[in-house]
Image (tube, rainbow, N blue to C red; front, side, top):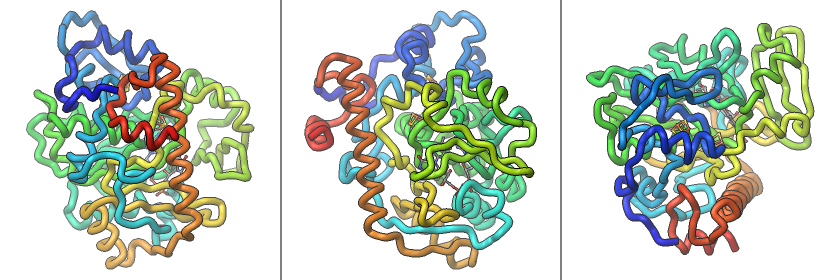
Amino acid sequence: MERRGAATAVEVKASKELFKEIINAGLCSLCGGCSGSCPYLVSYKGRVILMDNCNLADGQCHEYCWRTYSDLDALNQKVFGVPYGESEMGVFKEVFLARSKDPDIRRRSQDGGTVTTLLTVALAEKMIDAVVETKLDADKRPHGFLARSKKEILECAGASYEPSPVLETLNHLPKDSTDKLGFVGVPCQVSCLRKMQLNPPRNRVNVDNVKLVIGLFCGWTLAQGFHEFMKEHFDLSNAIKFDVPHSPFHTYDVYTESGKQSVELEDIRSYINTACSYCFDMTAEFADISVGSGRTAFKGWNTVVVRNKTGAKLVEKAKAKGALETQAIPEESITNLKRASLGKKKRTLENLIALSGSKKDLGYLDVSQDFITRFLS
Ligand SMILES: Cc1cc2nc3c(=O)[nH]c(=O)nc-3n(C[C@H](O)[C@H](O)[C@H](O)COP(=O)(O)OP(=O)(O)OC[C@H]3O[C@@H](n4cnc5c(N)ncnc54)[C@H](O)[C@@H]3O)c2cc1C
Ligand code: SF4
Ligand code: SF4
């Protein structure tokens, strides 16, 4: 593929093209990067909606959507100072298992409560003043939320497997805010944020105020009518946790105070967002630190990938304060993680090639020919 140069060099278009090329083409991951960037684009019940006609020829919605154009080298250089493609799961310093030492955080969190713990430590240490993350509304739909206290961070614990338009919350922050921000997101949300940081948007909050990025591992989200499916099959008003346990289980579980209800994964596969089949990143490769669940043998723990100094400093602080405990991860688990991450890249490259009909056209993805040869072989 001919490289197109820096991400900022891409042709600028606007909402009309955003809908034609991305949203209506099944390529939108519903990250929220475009919504809230102007008064007309909003996220509503798992969709991006244009409230009125927009006749702009160049709009920030198209410019900053990670799916219009992503130059992985430029993103990697910005965050780590090296070109993209060093390993199957991005640049990293260390991988280990971790969990919160606070039983209350563990009880309320998705896995080991590492994300919640790291955020509360970052807040207490004044590394950040607030964090943009995801919270469920009364209807159990995910939305972006600005948490300013330990109590509010705890209210965001847990996972929704529906896409959260978390970046919309960042876009809505006052332009003159000087808060040091944390951000939590799945890989597409992290990529979109980093794309904004490459060339900060005009007339919005300064995205360089984001001082800590925690990424979550992600295989897919459930969209396109999944919320309605859940309403039909589960008692959502009493739901306290959603989970997709690791193999050998193949279920989607909804927990209430009185127990667990499950459906077979096969029965909900049709709700997987089609956009996810074009996603190259499983481990949030552009985050400062990435967190996933421990595999079955380490249930209740998190797999943690520390990628740079920011992530390493925070983990050290959390351990020194007695907030986080860690243990070594078996080498075999790292090998499996790399294999899964590489598998996602291969599938994505094949899907993008099938979409364009040419090995030279990977759509939104700008990567070197070397990367394609290495990861497709
Ligand atoms: C859609 C999705 C898919 C995932 N897929 C995998 C996977 O395939 N393999 C794997 O190992 N791990 C996966 N994870 C990560 C895993 O579910 C946990 O989030 C992670 O292990 C952190 O656990 P924790 O106990 O530290 O989180 P907690 O301390 O409970 O914190 C959870 C954090 O996740 C945020 N969050 C919740 N829902 C969303 C959402 N929809 N979008 C963005 N942020 C959200 C919350 O705001 C909070 O900050 C996935 C997570 C999500 C949200
Ligand atoms: S991928 Fe994100 S930025 Fe792009 S159209 Fe969808 S919600 Fe908007
Ligand atoms: S698979 Fe990729 S595109 Fe889909 S929700 Fe996860 S990070 Fe986003």
